[in-house]
Length: 198
Image (cartoon, rainbow, N blue to C red; front, side, top):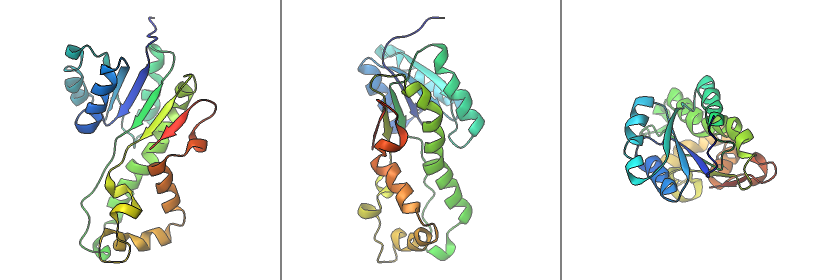
């Protein structure tokens, strides 16, 4: 088995868009990058373009809402590297906002929470053992402006914020959990050298 001693990064949701751009930028700076992709075929297609730029890119099938998929993905990097230096939690889901809270789909809210909150926790917990082996491990939490309650949601009106007000009251602590994902929980995820960034 050949061990790669370069800095290693894993990015979830990396087969396109911002996730792929992050992989390209980290690779250009000398990191070995793992593209975490729900669809392995799309991931392989995205990864094929990176070696042409001198980037060491590999694909790992990773569905953040599937416990077995996450566990299997966390075991793969150990076959070729000693540690994980950067984990970028980029995978996310946004269902189109409803016209009113009365029309909000509970199933859609569950899907978003499972991906955007619990998915982040699944992946981060699974990769912590590898991150803790790094002398400067980093966890990066990605989100859109919609993840900021203070900046994107008007809690006073008939906006998405007004519609979610009741949800936050029902789920005491939901805003706290959301804020941790948005702002980073330095003391929550790490032990030793691992740090969290939002």
